Length: 321
Image (cartoon, rainbow, N blue to C red):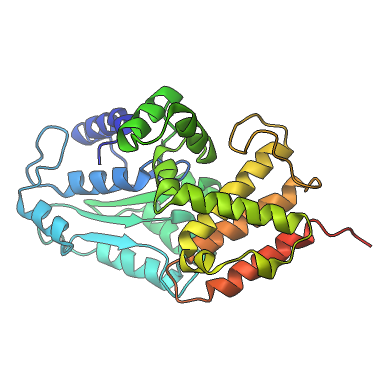
């Protein structure tokens, strides 16, 4: 997938790599939905490539072939285990041990951690020594959607690469090419809902996303108006947990912006909740929805989790006694 807003960043990273100014621990950070993972994968392939073609991995050498097949012995990835909510210390220790081994294909070894902020305290502490004293010819790429959650000691030892949303015209042009069925007004609205992140906006449209999102917004309004939780969370809410959690977090973010008096056309014109909700409470619900989305592929009862979340939402509109 070509991401035009990443081209300048890639060029800077390529120049840093060629001139040996690329730090051993680049931290690629910024809002979700901008292609940070794609950039990290490109950088990982670029560092491992044995015969780079200009500013890109060649795609033909032994290293690139092994990377494409998912069997490169010098490439290591670390994410949240399916049965966990965070990256535990033992997994980080395993990654560190792998990076200290002698490379088997080329001169380098590369590890990738995403999302880096998911490391628990012990895991982050275990990583710190490696950042302070990196192994020779070993790179560690960190991807973070919320770098503020990383310990300052980790951030200070990384080469920060901040990714920001593209200019509105550039984002709209990319969306127009990707989703020609949308008119300009719909593109503007979906990009606002996604905080200007084109990939996040595109994800919202997947699998009748807008229709599902509107259904969820209607359900939230019904509960806020006193309707029972049991009447609004249909089977499709549970059958599409990632989409449902994504939309729940998206609407919470829109409500937060509205509660803080920020401009934007994410919500339908004239839309208001029956009563104001404190931004702090909305932020807590937003964080819970994000956590639910991270567990979307896990074997958990999303019907129960979504029901519990909706009960918390309903309590936001219950008068205190």
